Image 1 (tube, rainbow, N blue to C red):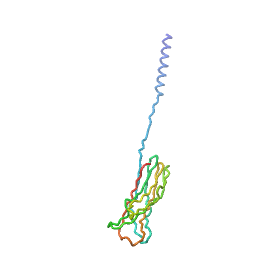
Image 2 (image 1 turned 180 degrees about the vertical axis):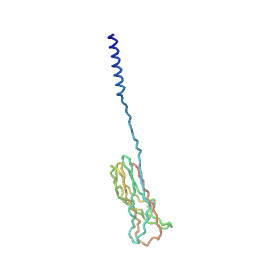
Image 3 (image 1 turned 120 degrees about the vertical axis):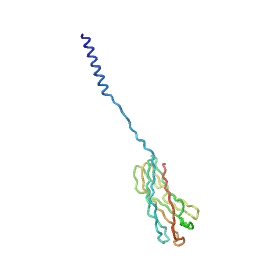
Image 4 (image 1 turned 45 degrees about the horizontal axis):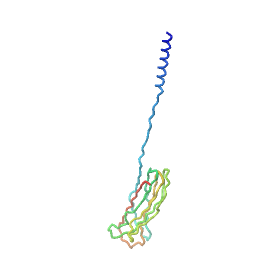
Length: 173
């Protein structure tokens, strides 16, 4: 009979041990967020000035463009004229100047101006002025673009509206 008691006791101990082992099992689950590469550039609204009737170049107020991206090697942003300033009649044209300055930035990237200023030269068939900036990492920058209407001498070009477009492009490095 002692043999049966010992067997029953051993069976109870085994069941108790198995039950506590089952109660102590664990599992785990991992979580991952996939962040796609994102680049953006936002232009301000169109700008207009009235010529001051001097021989000086007429400057538009600085226009703030917002550039941002999460490419780990950074971004390059370029601003380029599509053509010179052209009179609405198409018979007169004036050169355009571009210059950029770095405004506020956010994020770990360091931003640098690569080409600070450039000017078209319609007399030499050069309708493109291009300026650029770049970063070395993830971040956002406000880039202030200043456009100038190159005058040379007031009174030697027709009155009226002169239009010109600047296109901004951002790309990952």
